[in-house]
Amino acid sequence: MTLAVQAKPEEKVLEIRVSDKLTKEDYVSFVPEVERLIERHGKIRILFEMRDFHGWELSALWEDTTFDLKHFADIERLAMVGDKKWEEWMARFCRPFTSAKIQYFPIEEIEKARVWLEADS
Image 1 (cartoon, rainbow, N blue to C red):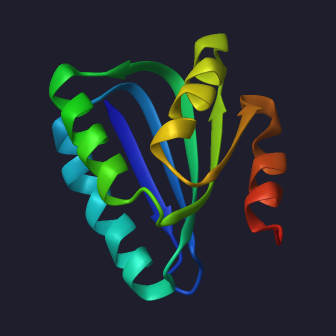
Image 2: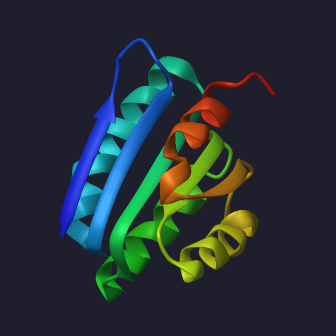
């Protein structure tokens, strides 16, 4: 698994880049950063970039469910960027688990995703 988390302290946008499979340990890595930004800004925006992504390990699914329930209303916008058709389906599947506005972008439109995240409602 490759996981990269990038945030600027003064901004409420967090970029998470994943490949391979998400693990329970990955959640240990990025959840504190998410919670730090939420504490600082209230609601945040996330760009979730998936390259050669193959989903979640079973232990990570529980972490994901717990995260979604805890932060249901803390994420304002979620841009999901990926290179596979099933990832677009996954963006639609996530909608009931968050109050965030969710938009899927193909990997070649990552800059468009960043613009959408930064835009005012």
